Image 1: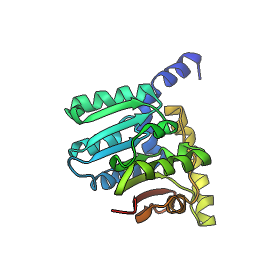
Image 2: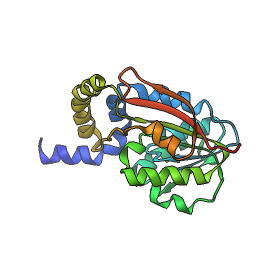
Image 3: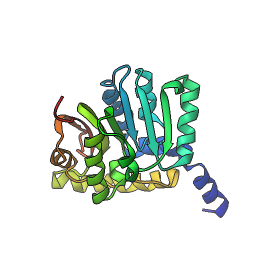
Image 4: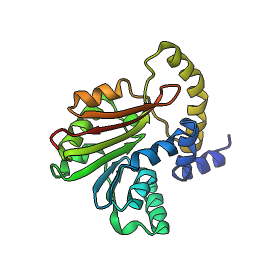
Length: 219
């Protein structure tokens, strides 16, 4: 690959992010986001962690929610803002360039819903533990946690099959987006250990992509 082509890939990575993620998840991500955000209601305060190009944010805003989207990538936030402006939904959305380490700045019990798509798989173990602790703090009692992400299959056979399929897909995704993710092991168990009540868990046939809903006890 020539240096020019490589630079063009790097420069255009944020705009290609959604395409790459669809490849990596074998198209599962769009349906998952639709199902998860179907539970968002008009007027609710929603936080989208790792909002990227705004896929979840746009859906929640379309439901009439008041959404704050956070991400560390300013280029992705610019794309997200453009999409919201084009959809006429920006009046109820605010984007902030920040990461999970700054969740401590959020007020306690201030959100009805916290959601995240393919962000937890980019965090270290310690970062995930901290993030779940902070989500529990900032969610209102009875508040809803919505997650879509890559997970490690529990079956040995499916883990082997997953690696055979995922390696080339991950390589293609990286070439397109310059990003990739790392499947989270025992995500549902980690969320339970953080004190949430699991509502529903949906896995794809390979058991490597999860849609999860949980509630903060007390509501």
